[in-house]
Length: 233
Image (spheres, rainbow, N blue to C red):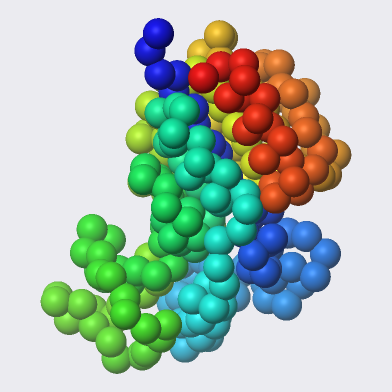
């Protein structure tokens, strides 16, 4: 019997359990900052210093945090399934936990990119991008993240991955951020879809039947993992 393809689609909820602030929940980052001031191309043109500082602080926070049980369950599942992770998160906690195949839809905060050519991407050693830090073309470096109003370059890759899934596990996402949330509509009719999130979420817009486990990732994923291994591995 062939190994089943398991796709994990993760959002900010899984990282929140490591202490990384989410954007949309009460007490989240959007209460402290307007997205229009720190997460749009217009914000970058208006005040590069503010945008750089915002992401520098996010990057510093990521470096101080560690993967949690939810991340490690995703790694353990690689012993039983062909696991690919699609994440909306810009942190690297999935990689640090040990996941082998991770696609970042919205970029990676521990990388910088040219503000002139988005294909020029650089690994970062520390947590700061400073005004005056430039790429090889001489343009200012910016965070390697997808801002509101920008295209999502990895979307086609994500659709391709989901379209071949036998099992789709959605964890820690509000399913409100598009086009990412629309990925659910690309999985095959035969795909088993599970949602792990403690909140009440409206899944009526998706044609797939979704089994909702109303727990945080650190609790719900270990429970779901046992079910998946017993029934599908």
